[in-house]
Image 1 (tube, helix red, strand yellow):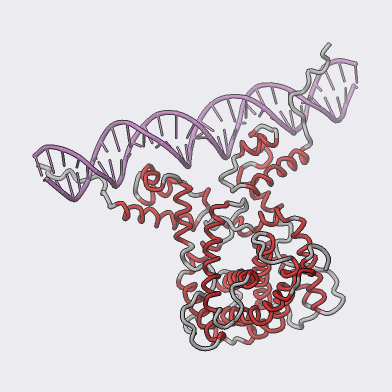
Image 2 (cartoon, rainbow over the protein chains, first blue to last red):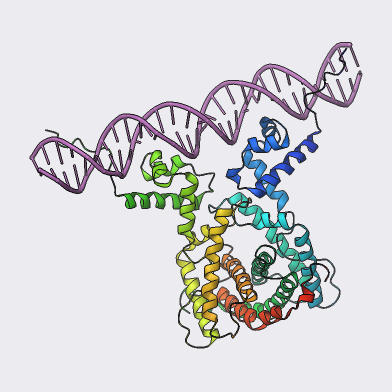
Length: 217
Length: 217
DNA sequence: AGCAAAATTGGCAGAGTGCCAATAGGGCAC
DNA sequence: GTGCCCTATTGGCACTCTGCCAATTTTGCT
């Protein structure tokens, strides 16, 4: 009396199914570009019907944005940190070290998150990435603040942001192009940061309005 | 007696039509993302049939790659330069100035070229952007070489590449976020470069293999 | 066991892409 | 000036992908 007709599919709880789809989508979107991944691909690999994706995320694009948001939760920029004990140099050194540690563990994910893609300014994507970087900058500034008297001026934020760019590029030289060792990246990041804060920042703040002209050397 | 039935469309020379389509495609791909631009959009704005796009470029993606190639011909990284007269500092200062000048003129295009996009490593796009940046690094190294004894070591290339990242981020602070003036970016770039070459690079080269371990501080 | 809520499926409609055969400019030979 | 031929250009067909929704199935609860 075939009591159980052997269910053809399993019914999962809302959040669980959602998470499962997100995992697959994250993998595929990390491997290939947005256009090169179809919702059918995601559905097939997740073992569900394509319509279910739309039930949970509405649209392919929204699913994509969800993936991006999850991905940039990982610090895409240098060195957050907590309580500073010791001099600025020590604090920075430890922060950089912790950050490189994280990078080494999540190499693939991080590379996918910072991998520059095509052109065409996608304002939403840009906003998400920008927010993530800005938060990283905030954390770093908060950590440094006790050491430098200056509050979070525009110049400080900009310099730290520039440092983020340097840190990303340098990390790529380690993880992707293999031209630097981890130790070298560490040295590069620590010394650069100290130089930027102690030497470059004061100079930048010292540039007065007359030098802010748009033309000429 | 209606001699000329008034041609319904004009027949252009191969290269000319091709260029015309590229101009439109470049504009649209710079404004919106790849997925948000349809071949119909491009064809309509170019005033041609959609099929013609495929005749010239084969595929939407190939057309896109063509646009990207053209776009990154513009130096996406700092400061090429020619013959150095004067000290390193003067050469760098002038180079940075010339570069900022170019940025100011081509603000929109440059922003489109470096604008961070989505995830999903698109290896072809990545290769194109990477080549462009690498060439910029080469030019910069060639300009600096007379001043530093060291040849183009891996460390030097990596440090200059890191500098490129810093320069891009700093320029965005000027052009996009408006937190720095042009003069401030100039100062930031010149001083940072000198610091990197004179102070940081030697330290990075001095990191011996024992420090190159993957773990630990 | 039966019911109801909700998770899941399957298929339909519209849009976008790739392709190719047919058409029509326009330069050139005569 | 006229006609011919080359090829730039068009228009439409087939296929894939996305968004949507009604129908179906599962499962917890009474």
